[in-house]
Length: 95
Image (cartoon, rainbow, N blue to C red; front, side, top):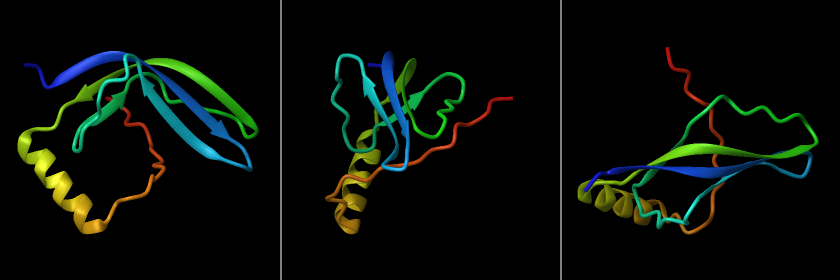
């Protein structure tokens, strides 16, 4: 079984005085388990202040191994990650 799955996704980005966020919804709503990683492909997204935009992109879902999953659960329990956290990101540039 492959540990990586490519699939289309929808990226919604808002940049306003009320919110600065990016949400990714994978097509087919696959189950994301502790330790899994999602990488969205494509050019960097730029949204001007006051805008809210939606983009279609391809993404890769990389499934965590048994040990990665166990480690993530252990760390989540240690840090009491029981709230939803928004994460900012900077796209990696490929050479």
